[in-house]
Amino acid sequence: MKILENCQKNRWCCFCKYWYDPTNSALTPRLNRDMYDVDKTVKCRCTCKNLLTPAVGNCPKFEKKPL
Image (cartoon, rainbow, N blue to C red; front, side, top):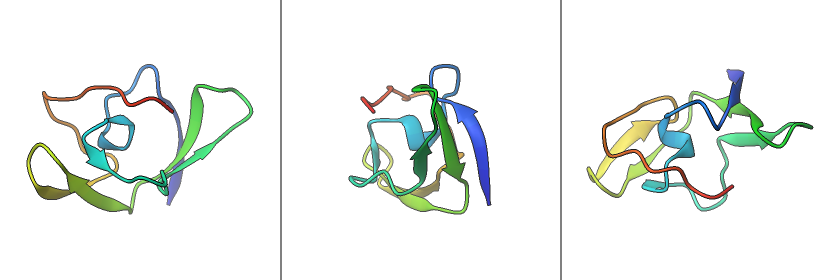
């Protein structure tokens, strides 16, 4: 299931530099450069916690990755 989200205002794992998803498979860009469709069923490894985390997860170590 995909949802539309603003990457500037959100602190989800899919927008974090520690969430290991080199191809950004959970994100699909929209016409506005800050808006993305997020597939919230995708799970990838967090390099800080060394755990599989969902795209819509969050934690206090969030750092925005360059998109």
